[in-house]
Image (tube, rainbow, N blue to C red; front, side, top):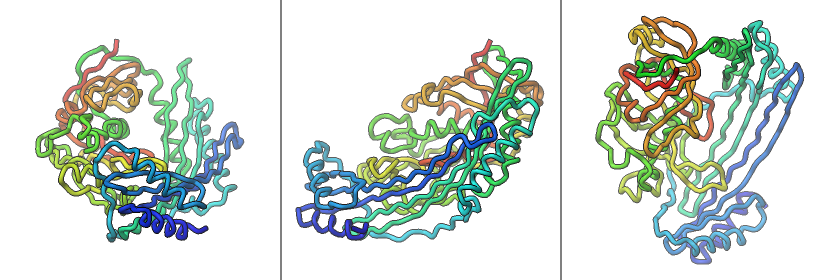
Length: 443
């Protein structure tokens, strides 16, 4: 049975059985990854996934059912209807009707077109480049090249037809460096055609690892701080649930009811741009057309992120931020391409203007050391000590603590060096930012 035949039979049967509407969400993907170690291929994997979720609306309630076997649409409908009858909540979750989408221009990548032998050779070259970059490199802990491709289709009885293809190619390396008995490591990655430049990826990974050698804690106290782009992107991603209308409606966001008020310094603008070339999307996980929006504009909270359900509850339009982690997952709310809009200063200029303080280059414990509900965080950190605007050596074994909103309000300058992390369910990026003060626990 083809997917089209399965869908047609499911829709017909659902309507015949009294459902008000029915919708299918189908996702399939193929992933390739190879890890090199010791001049050999250590791990090699090719995986394929695929599944279909059916949602029915019955008596004002939604019911879901999931399958990986495209062979019995009527049984899937019956399961979804049973689940709808068992639901106790009456919250309305509309379905997206037929609509049109902005065209998306996705660049092709040469790594996508390589065969598996060429990808394996690329991983081995990345390891060789990493080992050759510095005599202090002892080994390469992780050295991976990977590609993924996927197809998503959302269709319903209201006329919705949304389909997209996705592709990702990447490489990353994490060397282990040693000097005078001290061992350090750091990771660097590249995506798209940049993943073919293994020498550049290796050089960055080794440079970041070596920079951590000789680190020691600073005295505890309050410091002026520059959060480097990658560290700030990690922090922004960890706190991204505060921008979710779903979390706000459940009483789990400190931004609930704050639209139109100042939540950050005037120099801070936070955008969610699904059309950004880093990872463009035409529609969200419900088939709703994506739109670019400034969540925070010049310090003011302009909107929370909505899917169709939260928008109906709030009496507004969806912002195109319905997300699904997989076909088997329910619809939630999340960003697409979230980032702090860059300013004009370079990292060196931010540090020179700061005078004395700390450059934070790494934050650890992001899953355990922060609370998105309260906004509080206490995270292990590393970086550089800055004296009179100049690098004065590595800093390690410190903890930075504060509150996310307080940090946003303490931003004095926003840099120009916007950088994104590895794409996942969402892409999060940031330039480096200078913060007036942050509490640091050291020696």
